[in-house]
Length: 91
Image (cartoon, rainbow, N blue to C red):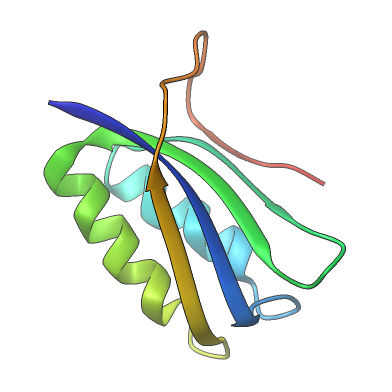
C-alpha cells in the first residue's frame, strides 16, 4: 500500500549534503517526491512510496548523511500529490 508523508528534519541538516543524500536514498527505495532547505535551517520533504520503503526512508532521515546531526524528525502522513514522478531537489 502506498503512503505519503511530509517530513521535517531538524538539527545540523544544511550544508551536509542532506538533500543529495535523501534523493539517493529515495531513488534506491523507489520513493517519489521532493526535498528542500527551509530558511530556518531545516530540511522539508514530501515523500511517497510503498509502506515498507517509507518506513526505511523515515528511519534513514533520523541518521541522515555522515556529517549531519539530526536532532528531530517530524513525519506526518499526508495526502498523495498528483502528477509526481521521481524525487527532485528543490532550490
